[in-house]
Structures are given as structure tokens and as C-alpha cells.
Amino acid sequence: MAKPPLSMSHDELRALVEAHVLGALPADEREAFEAHVATCASCATEVRAYAPVVGALARVVPQVDPPAALRARVLSAVVTDTRPGSDVVSAFRRTDATGSDASKVRLKPDTTYRSVRPWLAAAASIALAVGLAVYSSQLRGRIASLEGRLRDALARADATERREADARRAADEAQSQVAILTAPDVVRIDLAGQPAAPTAAARAMWSRQRGLVFTASNLPPLPAGRIYQLWVLTAEPAPISAALLRPDPSGRASAMVVTPVDMPAPTAMAVTIEPEGGVPAPTGDRYLVGVAPGH
Amino acid sequence: MWLLWAVIDRSGAASRWIEDRAKDEAALDRMRRGDAEALAELYDRHARPVYSLALRVLQDEGDAEDIVQDVFSQAWRQAARFDSARGNVAAWLLTIARSRAIDRLRARRARPDRGAELPPLPEIADAAPAADLQLLAAEQVARIRGALAALPLLQRVAIELAYYEGLTHTEIAERLEQPLGTVKTRIRLAMTKLREALAGA
Image 1 (cartoon, rainbow over the protein chains, first blue to last red):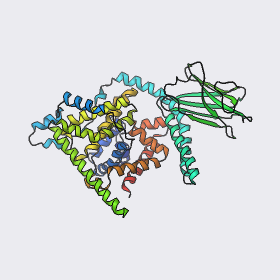
Image 2 (cartoon, helix red, strand yellow):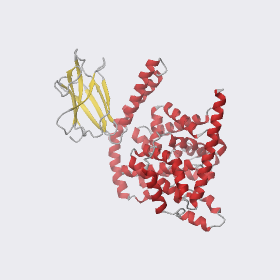
Image 3 (cartoon, helix red, strand yellow):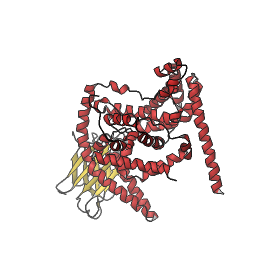
Image 4 (cartoon, helix red, strand yellow):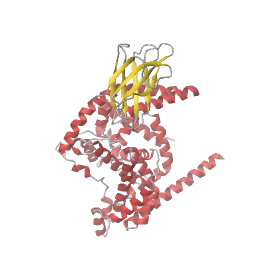
């Protein structure tokens, strides 16, 4: 590293313990922290105290059985390709009859990633910076409001049983929405109001892996027997019906849809007014229309 | 009466757990001498949590299988480096699994950290065995699950992005478009709560 070592006080370093045990420190801070903790007993104690938390985080994930065939594959590959102790360190240990060096040996994760070429890193950083700027501006407002929704939903869960069920549904939905909004492959489509509803506006966020979140505002009240229907346009000729929307009194409507993984990527989206119950293909006036980026 | 049963059940689980730990350490000893049976034994006890963690990080079954192979291959090669004073075998395998999975996730994103210097998860020595025994593994997991669910959403998202997606706090701040100081505070608060959840009765 060309950068000079960071200079931080004990208290500043102590504040990094939690990020450190999660592996969330950038390289320079991690080096400074590791140098400090080697000589600071109280910080070392703090780090050790987090071992059970980190261990539990590793085991708190949904438990899934590996495929049965994997066992034979792993065991035969491991035992035929390598000998135990083929690493330099343990070879060294075998030659050392006292074994006293073993206690000094510490595991270091393999560092093959260091071979990544700098130009590749630079290109990726530029792409990342551009992507993040777009991405994070989309997320900020949504996440803040979803956090509020989730908190409210969880608070409401203390009420009656029926209300608890509703609240949990809302909490789950808020969490699923966050999953979509934070998906690496998220695509945003902004929809603009059409002559039938010039002040209406909407936004859709779509992730192939995680689904679609749609929110609209300023939709005109529905006449009796009518409903708004959301359409996804793809490379296929027929629009796909995604959801029926009934705005609340303030004109807001939202929907969250799990989309099939093999669905073609949306090129555009539209909201039309249709007979109640929805129709297989759009027939009514368009209220909102938006085109996906790049189309 | 049920209380008595709970106590008996707990001590049964505790002795099984101690027994498993001793078996793991014995297996590593045998692996050092080239005993492939011992590796198979270790696989049977730990492949499931290792695979599950890799699957959570990588969200891809094929990639998760590769990580399982990497982990047990590394355990076989480095059996001599394992020091039981610094932690238990299960935690060691999961630390390797997390670090391999995050490396692969980052390679997949073609998204190296600044200067291609990626932060591995630090290896943390275990708390003293006596303290370990106070809480069995399954109970720890249940408590952490409850504590995670009780965290404010942004605190939980910050923890998840760090541990399961390998982002640094700077990257988390960028991803969530929150000030870095806020993200640091959230991580500290959340981790403190998780720690208290394990410590509290």
C-alpha cells in the first residue's frame, strides 16, 4: 500500500471493533486496527467477545442439505489431488521436532485475489461509481420510507391478533420490497401521466431475481365498475398483465409482483383503465406510460 | 417436572456438543496423518452448515458446491495449522467458507475493492471454552435469529450487507446512500444488540 498508515486514537480504533469482526473495514483501517489490537488487550478482549455473534451469523442462514453426490466428489477430489500438510507451513512444522512454531502459525485466508490487475480494478471502479450513483439515489427515499413502514408495521403487531396478521404482512412486504430495491440487477422504469391523468406519476423497480415493485400517485378516482390494470411490455408482442390497482383516496396505488425468472426483460410499462376484474389484453385509455432505460 | 426435563435435555445436548467438539479435534489429528476417513467424518458433520452459508452468500447451488469443495480441501491441507486453543473446528470451517464465498461473490461482481485489496473476515479466537458451554450452538442461533428480526431494518440491512455480501462500511454507506458515520453507528448498535442477545438470559 502506497498510503501512509492511518493514525487513529484508541477510542477511534475501539469504535471499529464491530465493523472489523464483520469483515467490513476497508484495507487501510483494517491494517491500522490489526496493528492496534496486537498490542491492546482491552480491544483484543472486545474482538474475542464477538466470536459467538459472528459464529451465530454464519449458522443463522436457512439450512439446506447439499446434494448427496457432492460428498463423493469432494472427498475423492480432495484426497487424490492433495496430501495433508502439503502447505509450506505444515511441512515446516514437520521438520521442527519441538513443534514450538505451530503455536505461532496463524491462518490467513488465501489471497489469490491480489492478482487482479490494476487496470481491471480501475475499469470496474468507474463502472461501479456510475452504477452506484444511479442506484443509490433510487434507493435512499424508498429505504427511508420502508424503514418507517416496517417499524410502524412491527409496532402495530402488538395490537389484536387480526391486526397483528395485517401488520406482519405489511412488514414482510416491506422486507420483500427492500430485497427488490437492493437487488444487484434492479431496473427502474418511470411512468408519466397521460392526457387522461396529466398529474399522475409512477415508478417501477424490477429485478429478474426478486420481482417487481410498483408505486403510483395522483391517479384519478375510479368510476364504479372500473379498475386500473398494470401492463408489462416485453420483446414479446402481447403485453403481460402484472397487477390490478385500486388507488386510495389520495390517489396512491402500489403493487408488488413476483415475476417469473424466465420473463423477458420489460421494455416498457403502462397503466390502463379497464372493466373491474381486469382483462387479458389492454382495451381502455392509457393513464400512465413509461419506457425502460435503453429502449 | 417439565423444568427438570428441560435441565436433563439441556445437559444431554451439552454433553453431545462437547463430544462432537472432541471428535472434530480428533478427526483433524487423524487428517494430519493422512487419514481420509477422518475427512469424510468431518464432512458428514459440517457439510450442511458450510453449504448453507455458501448458498446464502452466493445464491447459486453450483457455486455453493464449489465452496464446499474448497473448504474441505483447505481443511485437509491445513489441518496442521488448526489450533484448538483459538477456536472450534466448526467455526474455523465456517470462517473459511464465508471468506471463500465472499471472494467469489466479489470476483463475480468484477468489483474489486480499491486497489484490489479485499478485506477477509478476520479470524477470531473463540471465547474461553467454559463460556462457550454456557450457551449451546442451537440456542445461540435461535437468539441471534430473534435479535436480528428485532433490529430496525437499516441496522439489519447493514449487518447483512457486511457479513453476507462482503461490503465494507464505506460501500454500505454508498449503497444505502447514508452518511458513513450513520452506517458505522448502526453497525455498532446492531452488533451490540446481537451480543447482548447472546449474553442475556
